[in-house]
Structures are given as structure tokens and as C-alpha cells.
Image 1: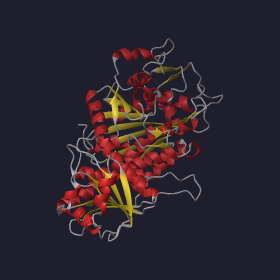
Image 2: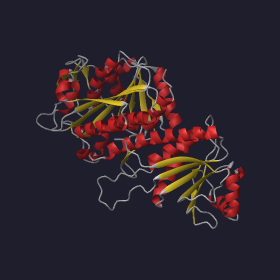
Image 3: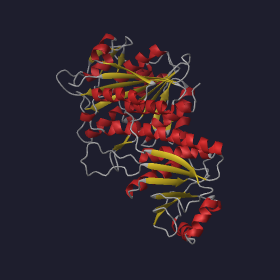
Image 4: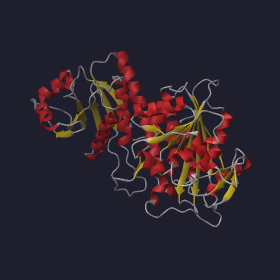
Length: 505
């Protein structure tokens, strides 16, 4: 089950037909220094008797500012949205924000279809095909509105159709533009899929419900093969670390493995591993009550795996990827794991659980051991793992730690190019001492409050000695607390860019 909003997305060249005759609820014109030389724009402005150009001069002073013009005489579009664009030197995440605001505006005024003329100006090093992809991705992923658990009067996304407008493309380039729009749309769909799973209340998104949704996705994408493991299966595999998390819950854990084979069998797969704690009370080391409802987003790592795999399948990408979703509830009960308990992981290493609220790493430890069987070229895990990363980096960037610098570099690069930014933190030998304990091979937390994000990665690194690995801590970026509580779908754009651009060789 992939979650898409738009029913139709297309690319239309308006060099011959012009803009004034275009029938659309919302015509969006991104205004930059090249706009005034565009023939289609000049004709539109002429028909408006220079009303459009005068409005631009008087209202659009700063990048990102916009003005809505309803019912302009002589023009078929019901509304025209003029948006002040950016300069070539501006970073990609700012370009992305322009089109995110367009999507929100379209929903706000009830538009059923949007036609966007992004123009030919692009960031340094990017072409107009990249721009078309970004527009499609931004619109699809931002017209999303979660409404499943609201009554029938809730406002749902009004925008169902997107047309990206170009001017003067050759037939071959127009076809290339359509493929770019398709790619952006597929990534946006993956983002929405991750958002949707995260936004579901915890009682609507248990490990078994996620299992059903993952299996249902294979009906849409036959190339995806799903294996599901219950607690008995995991017990047989020796996953004592993973199972220590679900002990306190009546809801049984599940591990889902999604295989996508789009390349030759000889090509080693890239493995994605996602933490899927569908609700986290902290266990016996219980969390404070304020904002505990936000712990339904503690499964956004697994949701990212789900979203990325749907994107790859939608595009028939020529790559081999295996995705692992480790899903469990972390609850309090008489059966729950206690601080000081020692468990044995699938790797054979014993773990003293000093804090039951450091549970995500216990799930990931066994999942990271499991993926060794695929002999992956690279392994990337994604998890809402530590509140410490919010303190370290704020809400703008995900934290990256790795045992392979090439992999870390390509993740950071993909974050910049997708607008889904990440920043590297060190993972030095000196950090490894935090895992030492008297009573087991490893402790699940280090002493004190310092370097909490890095200490979590140091723990995970003990299970990744046999392959190239990176850990992405998305606790700061996977969801918003303000102005409204909502999932973001990150880091689906980053991971999709990393895989689809073939950066890892």
C-alpha cells in the first residue's frame, strides 16, 4: 500500500498555445530575472494589460513572497499565483520550500488542479529536468493531508492534478521532462507513504497492522518480495535483544524484510534498516507524560524503508535493495524488561539493559546482524534514536555517523541535492568505551549525558563489523511538534536520491 495524493501529473509545453488559454484552477508563475524574457509570460502580461507585471513590481519584494490574482480578465485560469523565485546561488532546500508553499496554497484555496511554470532558472549545477523533478516531488508530498481518523467533514486534499509547464522543448527533451516528473512524483509518493504510517495513531498502526500493509503493497508492486517473521521465528534466530523490547506489550513484535531485485543477481544489494517502535512509553524507564503522544512517530525509520521501497518499485529502478523493518511496542507490564537485565543478541554478544528507554538500538542490533546474510555492499539504518541529536543539530538536519567515510560523504551529498539535509558527527575509537559494563559484553547506554547520539551509534557499530555501514538519527527531522504535529516523511528524499543517482559504487 503506497500512499499517493495526485491522480494525474503531466508536462505540457506552452510555447505555441500560450498561457492565457490554459484552463486550470491555479496557474503558478515563479518569477525570476528570466521570466520577463519568456514569450509565453510576455503574451500573458500583455493580455492582462500589464496588470501582472505591475503586481510583480509592487508586491514581490523578497524571495518566497507571493500574491494571488483571482479572475484576471482575458485569462482562462481561475487564479494566478505569482511567486518570487530564487537565485542560482541559493541552496536547494530553499528552492524546495518555494514549491512546498505552492502546494499548501493550492489546497488552501480549494484548487483541484495546479499548473506550474517554474521557468528555466535553476540552482548552480542543475538543469530544468532536475527542476521539473523537484516541482513534482514537492507538490505531491505537500498536498498531503492526513484525514483517516477524522470525521467526514474534515478537509481533504483538493489538489488532484499537476501540470508542469515548459516552453520550447524539443520532442525528445519533452519526453525526458515527463520522465523527470514521473521520478519526482514517485519520490513524493514515497514521502507520503512514510508520512501516512507515522501519522496513524498507535492503535491504528501496530506491528501486525504494518505487516498487513507491507504485504498489501506487493499487489501493486509484484517486484517486491516480503518475508515476515513473528516472535517465535525471531526466538529461533536468537534475537534476544529485539525481543526484550516487546516483552512488556500484549502486541507481538514483527520483523518484515522487503526484497527488491531490479538489477542483475550478481549485483550486491544495498540494505536499509529501519527502527519501527510503533509506540514508546520508555518501558520501565518510563517517559514523562508531556508529549508522550508524539511517541507514535518512533517508527519513522521503518516508515522510511517502506516509503523508499515503494519509490524504487514505482520507478522499476535498476538496483538491488533489501529493506528491514523492525517493529515492536515498548510498554510497561509485569513482563517488561527491567533495568539491569542481560539479554543475548543474534550476534552472540550479551547486552546489559541499563535503560529500557534506549530500546531502538536493541531492535536495530539484531536487524543489523540479520542483514549480514545478504552480503550487502552497504548498510544504512535510520532511526528516531536519540533526543540528544535535537540538542546537537536542531530540527534542520539528520545526524549521520558511519564506519565508512565514502558512504557518509555520499549521504551528506544526497541530503544537499534533495533538500533533505544531514550532517556528520564523529564516531571515534574514544567513543567505544561507553559500551563497557561489568555484567555483559555491552551496555545499551553510556555513562552521563554527553555525546548521547554518538554513544548510541557506538553501540550499533558493535554489530556492523562485517560491512560498510552508516547510521542516520532522524529523531529531530522525522516529525514536527510545532506549528502542528505531523510526520515529515524524511529521510525518504535523501535515501531515494542516494539510491536512484547511483552514488554508491
